Image 1 (tube, rainbow, N blue to C red):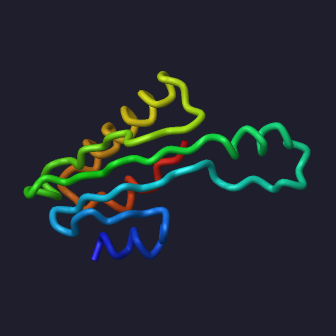
Image 2: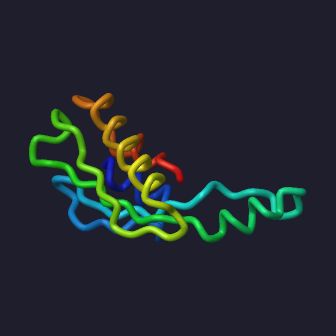
Image 3: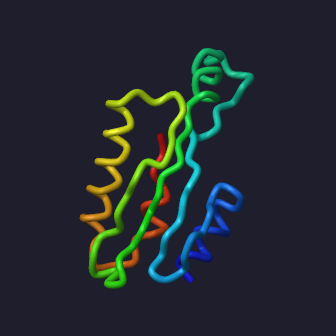
Length: 109
């Protein structure tokens, strides 16, 4: 049911590779910003920043943390890519021993 919940929230931005153990690719991008705001530069910049992360569980999931990989990215330098994956792995370890897939999908650039 956890995979279906992620799919319901992210729709076409989520590609399910396997249901058990869960393995998916999630297309993430910045949260939307009001284009009519005075932050036109931020809006323009954020349109060119996105990533596809891979989230894969072992057969022992949820007692073992999920593994997070960066599949591809656009507009992220090496440091930001590393920070994104490190943050995801840290969160996966903190959530270990409980269902964590939906929580980890809240990763944002």
